[in-house]
Length: 260
Image (cartoon, rainbow, N blue to C red):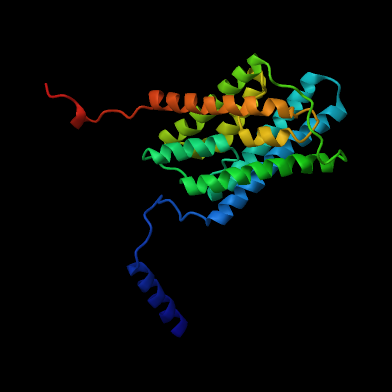
């Protein structure tokens, strides 16, 4: 009986305390937790990309089948990682996304601060390198062997501009229309499609680009091609944000309309 009275009293006290509004954003995780999520997520993503490429190479000589296996594994892996780690860090796994978010926050939108971006980006790069090394280790390959896969041709660089701009347009378009809940499926589907419709097979990620230079495998990129890829990926960020501003321009309210 006493326990019943205590429970009732606790309920009454709880009812008088301020409660969060329905749908309110939960408190942000500590920065160290978010950095860990970005590091682990980037490592897992690159391990999926590189590992599936190695596995496909060992199973078939057909380049088309290799790319199909590589892209499917990336789609499934990326979707799972965004679903799992999105609530912690936003699941960027990509300096291009982090820098774009910092830029929008700087201009009054939601996003990471400069201090947070300065933590996210190194975590993503370290994670990407670790993921490539882990993938090679799992398949008994040299832990670090620079890639010899040259990707410096102009049409490949154009493909990276398109891939990165499309990714930024997708992510920030979802944010502008309050549909980020669809990000795990939408982003994974876009990257899977971009494997096939871009000439570069859609790296669209400076950290992943750096990580993939550490493996001389199907998914590798020669160190000499890295700077060019990162440069055009940053161009893609600018193009993507410009498209977001143009396409998702805030509408005018009735109060903003000129008087008749």
